[in-house]
Amino acid sequence: MTNDAIPNLSAYDDDSLDKAFTALQKQAQADAAAMAGLDDLEAFRLKWLGRKQGLLNDVSSRWLKAAPPEAKKSVGERFKSLKSLVESLLDSAEGAGPSDAALAAEAIDITLPGTRRLTGAEHPITRTLNEIVSVFAALGYSVGVGPEVETDFYNFESMNFPPGHPARDTQDTLVVACQERRPLRDRLLLRTHTSPVQMRTMEQQPPPVRIVIPGKVHRNDAQDATHSPIFHQVEGLCVDRNITFSDLKGTLDHAMKALFGSSVKTRFFPSFFPFTEPSADVQISCIFCGGKGCRKCKQSGWIELLGCGMVDPAVFAFAAEKQPAYDPRKISGFAFGMGVERIAMMKYGISEIGQFYAGDMRFLGQFA
Ligand code: 2U9
Image (cartoon, rainbow, N blue to C red):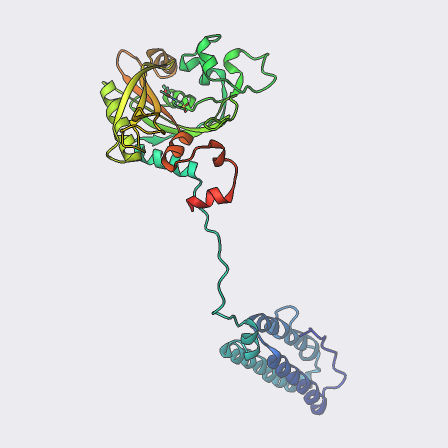
């Protein structure tokens, strides 16, 4: 349906007007008969009734407005009936729905098998991370996030790793280049743990604090079956009056039961971290053999899963520089940290950490 221009009328006698209007009526009827689908209906409406370029608009301006006064009435009557014809053609086409030809063109064979679409699914690391976070969220913990590019102060110094202290060697660090001219505390690095977010949170709010920090961390470690230079942690911090090691044990025992099943047992071994004192490693009874001893737990019946401890007063002292309420004589707290990959590997029986990052659909599809 092209928009043919409306020629100017050379004569306004009844015969000439009849001829001109009849031609347009026929054209409108032919256009209406040729309509097949909704697109054609809209094209018809635009061609005939379009406000600026519609043919009726042209007829009105070229024939009706240009008519000599004595012919205005007869042109007007014919214009009115042409317009009603176009409108009724449009109405009946709208009511009639698509033509048989249009329906046939759109017909589908519903007996053919459909196209199977892949359903997206959470990555096993995201799923495990969310599961861990929800266990603590149910205990009233809130969730914090913070920068992955950190300063030496937040990543190390405030966490009780003094400059030059050998404890720093336990977390091989990727540093941002060309920082040598800055004071050590301001130099940028890729965070080796999510602990700086807890420190930043304490600086922002007085106790009580109950937070978990999930996130990506970076270490200058070679990749092997169980290590990756980029991995994920969930760390937690609880600070209030009278928080004791029993609170820590009860909380983590509950969390491990929530994550691995209510029959799981926990035990706490003395350990060392610069930021907690006393510190402990937490083991859970082997989820593969129930504690009897198997290859997975090296016949011990126990698997080491996370670290924890009571927040070192030296760490509180750094927070107290901005929030005096973190006075270790008045408050106490516990903290813990776990590797998400390690927990996901345990939960899903995965032996190669690299599987998580390879993007192999045969692996990822198992979690859909
Ligand atoms: C503040 C004070 C103390 C966080 C803690 C651990 C123990 C721990 C490791 C587990 C496996 C890291 O992913 S891993 O390699 N983490 O053992 N993390 S206590 O202690 C804090 C954190 C923040 C202010």
